Image 1 (tube, rainbow, N blue to C red):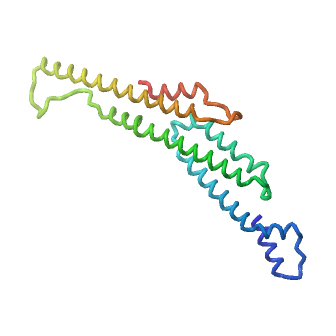
Image 2 (image 1 turned 135 degrees about the horizontal axis):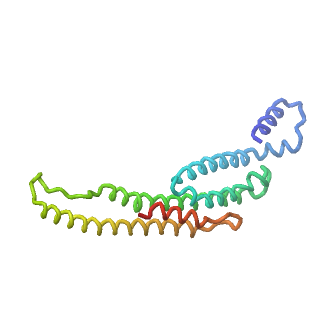
Image 3 (image 1 turned 180 degrees about the vertical axis):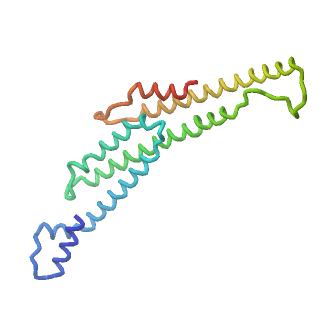
Length: 202
């Protein structure tokens, strides 16, 4: 359409060429069409940015949500034309869906980073054996007592961390499942939910 506007302007400058009425009407709406074009380009850039925020571990869980957004985008690829009367409504609807998806992804990523991954990093640094300080020598019985106390303490701490991770994964799954989807979009499969739970179940 922008090329058509440029060509119409060239014909208009030539002066002695008759310009079709439809092309003149197009020229009168040049600013509106340029605004739509720029906003659609910006929308697609934002779509790529937001979908790029999805982490691999949650990609399959968030697939229905990405499908939901693509369903919202579909009229722009199938039914709408540059002269459609409802382009403004379409853009508002897609922006709203994109904002909601970005908030969901940000919430999921926040749970993953601050509650799951942070706890997993702490767990990965746990020492399984406690050695005497300053390399001092201890008897075998004392060494066994030190290890038993350490194992008891570490086990309690690991159980607590495991429960925190489990609660965080459940919260993340609850947030994803509660997100409203279009009726035409397939919901998250139970097998995907089980797969993610199993990934963090130790």
